[in-house]
Image 1 (cartoon, rainbow, N blue to C red):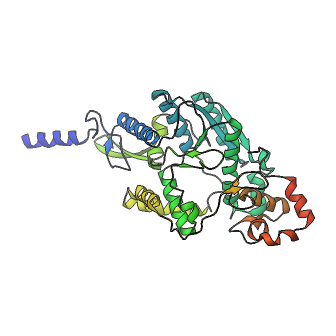
Image 2: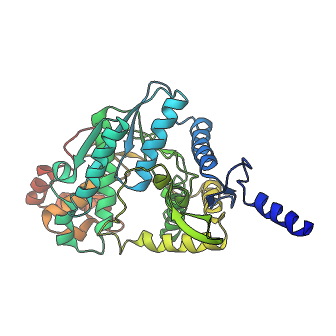
Image 3: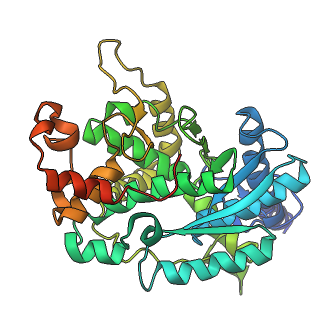
Amino acid sequence: MEASEAKSKKQGASRLCCLCNQRRPVLKRPKTLQQICKDCFYEVFEEEIHQVIVKNGLFKAGERVAIGASGGKDSTVLAYVLSELNRRHSYGLDLFLLSIDEGITGYRDDSLETVKRNELQYGLPLQILSYKDLYGWTMDDIVKMIGLKNNCTFCGVFRRQALDRGAALLKVDKLVTGHNADDIAETVLLNILRGDIARLSRCTSITTGEDGPIPRCKPFKYTYEKEIVIYPFITESFSSIVLFLHTYAYFKKLDYFSTECIYSPNAYRGFAREFIKDLERLRPRAILDIIKSGEDFRIATTTKMPEQGTCERCGYISSQKWCKACVLLDGLNRGLPKMGIGRARGGVNGDHKKETKKPASAARSLESKQCGSLDF
């Protein structure tokens, strides 16, 4: 009898939060495998992000900071947490929401409605820029021309530049994005697979673009996607253990858009993502270890790195005569959308010696539309 009571007490103790030892655990942290309660989860989740911000000196008091907001779970949680930390720890930041409308019917139009609600919920000013206004094309138009195989190349290049142009329009000092640990580990792997030494050398940096128009910061660099999105948590119901899937956004009752982009199923990144998830299931720390490996990579001194300059057409940062966005946009406007896909092979950026042979009609076409209507 006494042995049974002792066993019962031991089991009861083991079902308490391992941090506070007061409340029942509701989730097991993917990173540490600790079983913790909801209140302790909020505390450690937000405190870890605060420590990342402080230790890396991401912000200075008085800075204007734009939050890249898509309406998805990462950017929504980032907007909420950064607003809370800014108030709690007196960062002294002026925060803004910056959204890009790629022109994807049935996806981006719906997610932007979520961002507009976030604007009211968090009291943050919102700026929306569209591909149509900046480039004269929507992603729907581009997909009709290029198909589903390479559309993510266009969207990624255009979106990156659109965010910088929006940040310049808002006159902010920093741009923060919701890239999490999983995203960064995927990028390390992709750059290795592509042999992209230039990007591999900087993809794990928590702040990038310091030599460009506006620095970008990633406060979620060490935050697992599961800690933002999916958590298995255990609760006792009718004397049985039931597994539930919940999220930070769910616990906090945040308003976010959860549908995946309708044009992304064929993206190359998706294969890297699945591989990372398989590694995580076998060894949860694999994600952080990949990031650490990326941080520790050293590029040989004999490796020739691209020299940073500016695009001759739009003034955006570029290691070539024209930035990638201008090259892609020129291909679209000429009716040759595949011209700028892949590594440069001739043309504007590939063979400067042949530029003098470019037809006059092509030159007029290039001058007719720059990539973006906001100058740097």
